[in-house]
Image 1: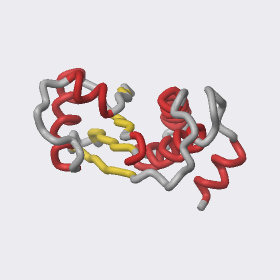
Image 2: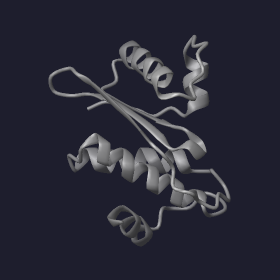
Image 3: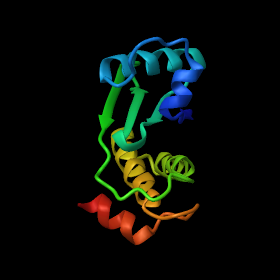
Image 4: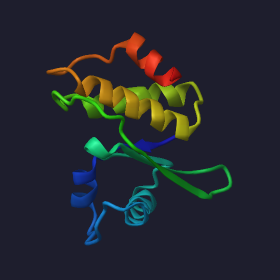
Amino acid sequence: MSLFKPNLRELRDGLPCKSDLNNKENLDKAVFALQDKIHAEIVLTTLSERGIHFSYKDKYGNRNSGLITAAVKNIADVSGAGDTVVSIAALCLAANIPVETLAQICNIGGGLVCEQTGVVPVNKEKLIINVNC
């Protein structure tokens, strides 16, 4: 299973995209173009304070995508948030967790590390509590 995780700026810089990527329709088009170009089965695009966008092809080749809004957080520092998202996504893929759920867990984990200053590990207990809510 292949996964690619750009942030919104990286997506804009990596594609010749002139569209406003602040709406889901344009974001879907840009991510689908990227997905086709690099042959990634799953693309998770982190959107900073807006949350995370996910896109994947199911076993029949149908495209699926969604936008998960970020929970309101007291952002202290975004350092390490992308690495946290990639790490959680890898664990979820290894556990055969569905992509929608994977994206939700990644979004929560990325938000949790942003509440602290510096590069910190995600607090497992807080992640579990927030995922189970």
